[in-house]
Image (tube, rainbow, N blue to C red; front, side):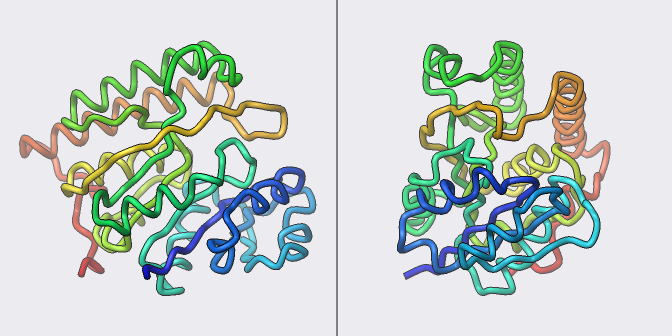
Length: 249
């Protein structure tokens, strides 16, 4: 059986962490790593109280920087499959076995939780209309440019095979929110098999979410990453994010 390591990139998640852990199926709770990015609340104390392995950054590194630590630790722990779960409870952890299962059965190398099953369901779950529209536009652009067919490119609930983490040069990615987009475009560039399964949308006060200004920046950076992908494909540029990881094996 594959070793599944769950990583939680955490920042101010003390209120939502207990429910997140409770909803992870029990058989998947034995290998959970929480990386705290200098939270200002009791995230570390709550996590330790739940018996999690906790690693705390000495300074805030950003969302992407947090993930870099998560994946490094997961690889060191001997993971075959790594599942990222946001501890803010915006994504339902009950689907962890399904995410990991598609990888374990060699159906996919990357699996995402897709929040856009229907427009009605997504909006009733609290996703702001401007985020829904930008999500649809940018996801379409990503599919057209890369040739993939993902229902959503902006989900924070993801599972990766160890092959993905050893092949993609994710260490070259941004330490900010655009890390996620760079990672998926890299996965497409290196021929990883990507798929998704539905997960309900949950927006509420404690769930982390970037504001309109940050969302606009994210959208523009997404288009820039797609431009880099295109330039690399036609041989006009060689961005470092598309240079194969030296640890590939």
